[in-house]
Image (cartoon, rainbow, N blue to C red; front, side):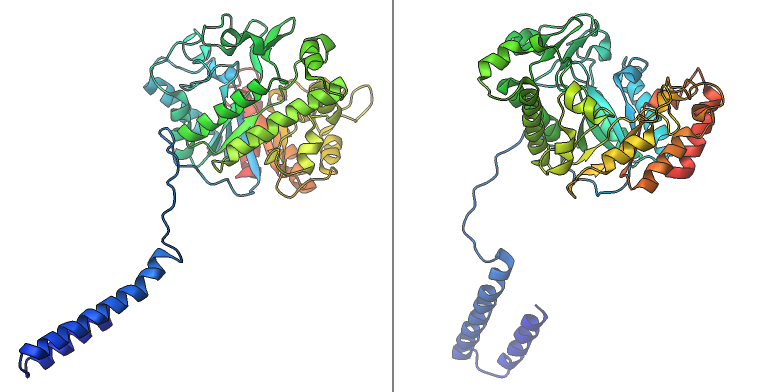
Length: 431
């Protein structure tokens, strides 16, 4: 551009000493050719190698900017469950915002970087959804609009503290042990009764149903479209029972040659792949916190966690729930001690795209882990059990730790002094 301007000035100076008629025409012609050649030279670099019109992307509904997946940093997470929401003020947006801000501030003070916020616990949601009614946790009545969007507040308050927020979902559970007390007309249990399976104590979406799998994947797309969430998080509630009659009709109708157990695992695998793809379309992480033992995962809930670790396309991280202590003994055996179980998980083949962290039982503080090593004077009464466990996991090469759950650290009325000591010790490790 500087060259073009000096060139023009030079030519104008020359024109002052010449006749204007034909010389002016020559000048203007030369100047026009110059700018035309400059345009032809510059524009391909601006437009790129091709200016062929491209089809515009399909619009999305009020899409929030899709966050980039978090870097593979150490996971330092806290679960905030539906049990915490039972003691949270949903009476107004301002009241809920105050409670949410306090929760996020406390979690950030630990040195944590991630919150798993329970936003769909019983086939109902802490946000407006085309697929699920408002949760009974918001107003006491399932399907009743609280007048504001709790998830939007959670995302905003978490991000204000520098925390990533992952939407924690129970994919299949609709009602368990009388919770919620009453399902509304918009519950999938009533809208799609052919999708529902029953146990003696609850109702669940049928894991074998293709329609259910699509419905759940679509609901994840809805979440990722409308909220700047950083991840989708499943816990360990997959198949609720091993009883053959739970889904005998679906198994028979499938015509599968697989055993019942393998067929159930395949159903869960199909859901995992679909939800992983749905989240990744928006650059949103997808992870799971399965049961703590491999046998419990594979044979109890039909979740093939070893496969999810070994092959890409199922999840970005696993956080097995290792809620026993380092010194845990049961009938003299340490088979379920945290160190033994962590080593077993860490020895499994693992694709480089999957992180492996572990869940720690903050709810054990003061009470112990129901082993031979529970009670006064044991690790759960030291005031640094969780910090020691997190440090041990780090030394073993784990990708981090998550704490279950928030209320046993902040607001622990049973063991307030121990909880304060645990918090201080965790800050030393995570801070």
